[in-house]
Length: 252
Image 1 (cartoon, one colour):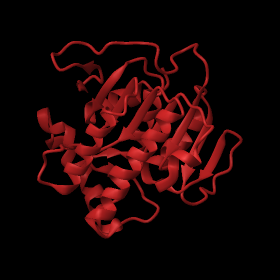
Image 2 (tube, one colour):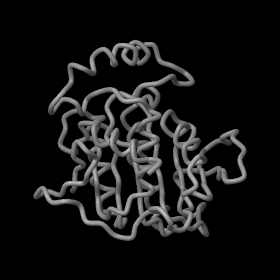
Image 3 (cartoon, one colour):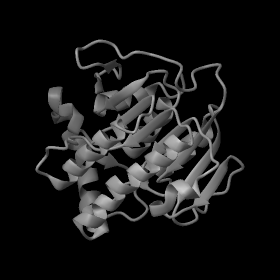
Image 4 (cartoon, rainbow, N blue to C red):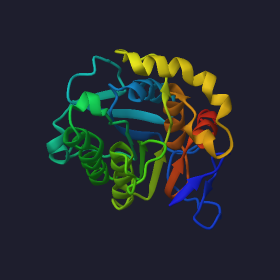
């Protein structure tokens, strides 16, 4: 699987540049239809607004379990049950799918419920996106994701990434941010303290450790929008430096 370097360029397993193809909406190409999951979440909320600001996406099918409460002529909010996602999204066609689904162990209440959201629902959404003819799938994962990790959270994220690679999308972009910074709608005390401290810690994380730097959720959302315009094929992973570089190309 290819990994983005510090400049956000895709690098293959042997260090070669990632191949390019006709995937994505580069300058001058047709306007895309996007399928979005997780728009009510931290990154997803920023992403929805960012998608509305780009002319590259003309229609957004935002799927959620409850109404988003966000009205816009370009948004079609579909209320769904994630256990029955494919049948409920029949008839939708899109070019790109973006996934911000995710929870925490504390919110989920158990490892089983956590995995249901962060693995089962993500894969269910991916299958629905594939059926909808999506050519590119963009997902938020986590720095340190590894299917062999002893940490349940990171192991689940790693298994999710591996499963997505087998779905068969022509292009797969996996963003692996560290701690997400910004003001949540319902801030959790420990996360609030950590997010305030992280900007002070970031300068001490450099070299191989810079991937663990905290990054604004808004920046991750901007990077996801930029990825919709990419022409790179195959799987790509982006950690801190790559996400920042990708976000900087959002308007290019």
